[in-house]
Image (tube, rainbow, N blue to C red; front, side):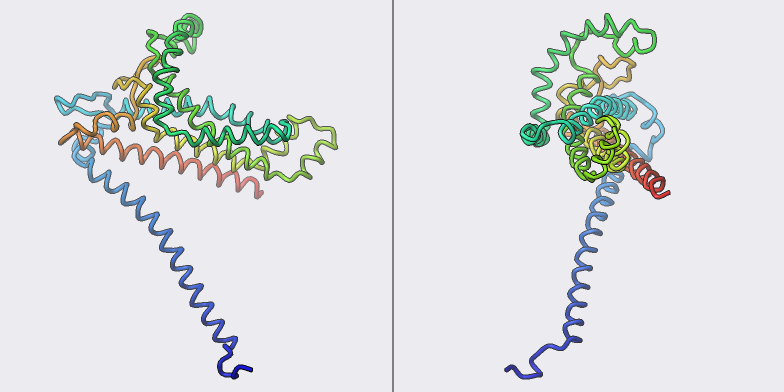
Length: 320
């Protein structure tokens, strides 16, 4: 039998556990603060690097679409326009397809088919962006160049959307970049939707089916309301990926500093502008590119902030 004084008392164990818990909480707090410090450091470093352009002629930089390194005349409007337009096209194309695939895998597909399709989607998400860019340049751009005359002859003659499909059949352009981005972000949005759709309790869906509901009614009245917040979060996750994509967009966008109403014309984005010109940039040119990086940070932050506000608003409504 061990001596009585060698057996730890309950008070000693409590003090030891409390000390270990304090260390663990401190470690977790340090990790959280480290992430915030890295985020703040990235924002401040890009702001400081672009101070020569942002603080000297900030309004002109934000409102102008000029980009002339010879005369040191720089404007961020064209890259911001291209970034937002291509991301919006990608979102419009990817969200319905992702929604349909996720619903098919969770509600309709037979069991033997769900595994292979889900694996294929995960493999799409693992493909590097430069591979998408090469595929877009060598395969998809010639295909778009062959069908753009048909788009101009048909959709280009419509009264409201006709200007969106005017222009020469170059293949390179905003529409091509948006479609390539849609292919890239589709696996991320689809995977999130599929996972959250699987969290819906089976009893809720079976009860709805027992009352005579169709599959669409079960999806619209049971699945979507139950997973609405998570679905919106997955959509904005894909949007964040599209906003910051670099290589795939650089290959197929055309890299023209212009703002046009046609989706078939070349354009540029913030990330592609930085990737194309940063190696040769010096002085004010380099500061302008770093300022573009800061603007991309701001745009992404605003998008994610809007997502958080929407999710909070939905949560408040669900609480009521």
